[in-house]
Length: 92
Length: 187
Ligand SMILES: [Zn+2]
Image (cartoon, rainbow over all chains, first blue to last red; front, side):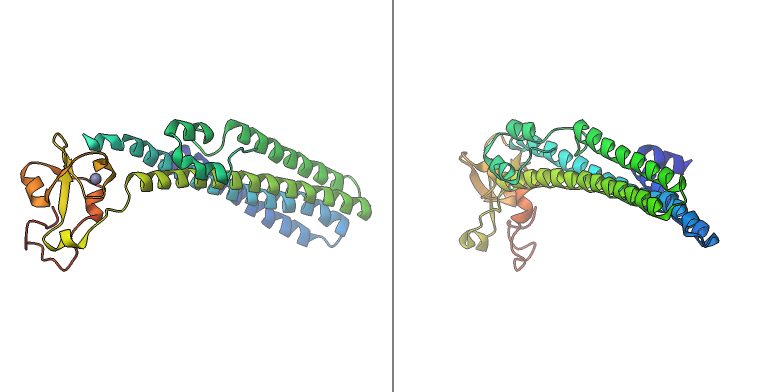
């Protein structure tokens, strides 16, 4: 399955996407639950769980995705540096 | 968390590759294990704070204490956000240091070929040293401290030499010279 292969090799991006998805669902569910009741004392628990949890997961997902980009850049730059160190071969 | 500073990175040009490598860790990703553990602890604390805030809000119907617990949860989210930002800034910084290192090294080893207009009029001359497999532009780092013999690119090509992949790209003749004019064309 191509999606599973992608998730295995790009685990950081897969986790990030999953966190954003769950965060968005949490925010949506929290919003619906809060709309269901007019009592502030019943609304606040949803704000504290689904609301704050959703925000946290959105941030976490963004962090994981950007981390993946930084990992890729790091890997590429290290490759270039290794090739630079081997430039001496050209002087043969 | 990090001991890398901009000044250190700039001073790195004059040091050996080994010394540079010692300062910038050589791991498979920008973050060391210690960074990962520290940020994971901060994120875990934030998560625990979120759960505590949620339980606190759910445990009472008193609005004042509910908003107090909600504030606790918001503080936990801010702590988590702080951890995420530190993580990303640390990664960005390490990648930037490595990028500058690579670019500095590239610039030092392959400076722009120095071209003199007099040489260019009758086809650019490329240098090589006996035993070399490649020919180079006059300014190439690989000809430094050597006594190269200069000739047109076609002469070197006929002798079975290859163009240096780095310096000869920038050392091609100016566009106003027709390609099949003299032996100075791009090889
Ligand atoms: Zn060269």
